[in-house]
Amino acid sequence: MGDLFEDYAAGPAWDEMFDPDGGIRPGYAALYGALAALGVDDLAERGALRDRSLRDQGITFSLSGEERPIPLDLLPRVISAEEWSVLEAGVVQRVRALEAFLADVYGPQDIVTEGVVPRRLVTTSPNFLRQAAHLDPPNGVRIHVAGVDILRGPDGGYVVLEDNLRTPSGISYVIENRRIMARVFSELFASHRIRPVDDYPTMLLQALRAAVPPRSGDRGAEPTVVVLTPGVHNAAYFEHSFLARQMGVEMVEGRDLICRDNTIRMRTTDGERRVDVIYRRIDDDFLDPVQFRPDSLLGCAGVVNAARAGNVAIANAVGNGVADDKAVYPYVPEMIRYYLGEAPILGTVPTFRLDRDDERAEALSRIGELVWKPVASSGGYGLVIGPQAEEATIDRLRQAVLADPRAYIAQELCLLSTAPTHCGDRLEPRHVDLRPFAVNDGRRVWVAPGGLTRVALPRGSLVVNSSQGGGSKDTWALAGDDDLPDLPSADARRCGPARPRPSAAPEPGPSASVATQQQQQQQC
Image 1 (tube, rainbow, N blue to C red):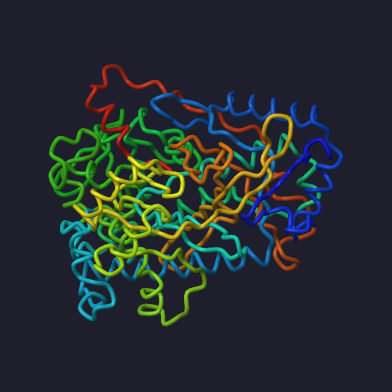
Image 2 (image 1 turned 90 degrees about the vertical axis):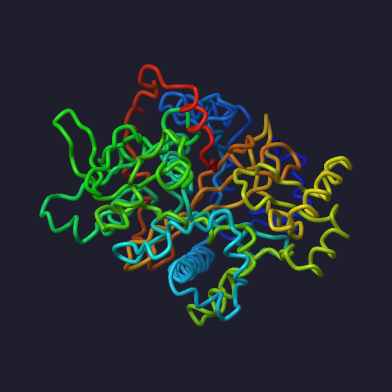
């Protein structure tokens, strides 16, 4: 153990395993004890087994156009039962408030009329789509799936970094990480009572079936749910095929769908088949060339009109991006108070609203101390961390903010917590965040236990996004005394051989423009 943790120094950030005095934090004692019995060579062998499993199962993420295994660290992140109960409640509360906000801004707009959220902030959002106005979903659900990015600050408190309400990605890695860890470190599952994560596909399918429009459901037939993917060139294509396979539904591309008489039909070898629910993994811009980008080859022409006619449900709903707009983020605590009459359970990162002259002036006076984000970007693209940025980058940023303040937000630098990570022949601290995934079926919001812990692999880096070369950890939300019987984790008991990955080979002849559009979709 001494070799693995030799010179381990957590630094100023909150360390998930060790307290400032070197003591073991709650929930990590059993993991620490298991690692104490391992040597460097033993850990290296388990790392080789992990790598073979990732390669054999084809668990990949597209980075710079190259398919590669998403790095999985050997050490899990552990969240105690008490902490998980707070995180779960906070995510549920946030999703409920954001759901109410979307229903409001695409309907009566009471929250902007009363000045709680500035009207101009909503109407100037690039993701506020007038095509979604009064497009009421069948069961009142617009956010069928949410991914909420959370970090733990230096004081140990959890705060929300941002919301993902359009096409959040990463749940497939949560499930596959657990399966691989059950093989690589099977003995750890006997000493921990871990909440299972493999119920997610069942819960997702239940939520999608609950969204079947009444007119469509009156047919008496089994509802048809499909996963709509941009195609094999998309960074998250593995996840699209994984979820379709796990739910037992068809995965389709836009060319497989046709709109006729305001209904959506899927081309099959047995003829056309009506589609009731589309779980789309395509951005709004590419979803319907009639309503959005006319040059899109990825979506289905007429799908928005079919949804408005009540003949198909789109999950997540069109126009959700206005609620996860980074400039709208500072107002979410007020949304919680306004719609739910509750105090926010989870905090937020202090954020400067650059459309306000006083806050913009203060932020620009401290430009080198803050974190700057373009509101329209995802995946960590365009992020500028002031203390780490070069002078030329700061100068360009200043000019860009002055030219278009609405396009950026500025936040206080919040040091992400660290967790022991396998680096070479030792364990070193690396910064991590957490993305829990929530599923909403209209009756309740269910949160998959744990979520995706993303790791900034370069030493000192604060950028955890997979699209920027980050890795992941298996996240163990421990069960309380009343949650599970005193047995090994359900994941360790159920984990059998993973299903083989479907072929990622594209059909003959995709055009370059199709490949380019596929790559333009959001990344986790």
